[in-house]
Image (cartoon, rainbow, N blue to C red):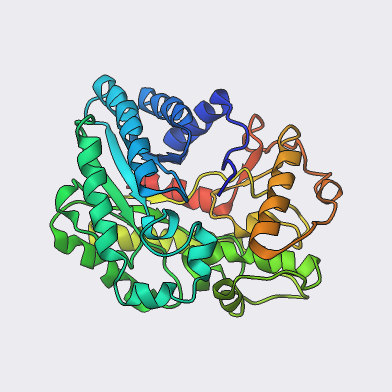
Length: 376
């Protein structure tokens, strides 16, 4: 949404993280997402050289369908170059959750406008998004297959009813929350009915008490945190405000809970494994823009799905703060934030103890995922 998920792209750091993902988390595949095709190519090539399978996921948010198609054609050229060097180990995604993140499926110029539109959920429940979505996916699949000769997929959000006939894999971003917990296993099984290999493109949980209630919407906690330290002066989007009502607080703030995140991830992994899906990608490894803080009022990692908690890097911290202020104003009408430099002074530039060369430290979820994959 106008900012880089990784403010500083350091190929050496990316190499080291992919090395850890392969050797310490015992993963055999990685899904690499982002907008910049050069970054994607660099990371994908590194992963392939290290022996990982790559699911390349170029993603252009909040742009027109025509722009997305042109972008995907360029992405297909990158993917085909990689496939020719590493045959059978590159899968290309033509997008993810396009109803939410692309213009032209439902009304709204950007993600927040779409989510805040009073007609959004009404139209989704009526299924009005499915016809234009599948029309776009058909064009996208045809466009990339002109160049890319490998396997192709798309990663859907559960309310998208995709025509999977043109794809090699059924891809679904599936998070467990309180609404579907009792039917979660059945939901997974339903996707096997298409008689194609099923890939879970995203699943996981945030890192606070009550995050299991919200599942994939766990990120909304950030709005509640900002509301707390700004004295209730922000305009939280209505859908997010409703979600925040179910999240408990202790002594006026949200509570970090790494054990809950670890438990949720392992239980979901077990459900996918039991159902017989082809694979599952934990969302996500690292979130550099969601800095950890010992003070729970400013611990942005609470709203992160990552397996590691990030420390803010000196040369990118001010950039992250500036972008946070810009997005806060656009999304919630926030005019200014507290002096975050002083709030994070004791962790800016810090490295982890487990991996002293990395600006992050593994959470409990990292350890349980590592143990799970080591035995599967």
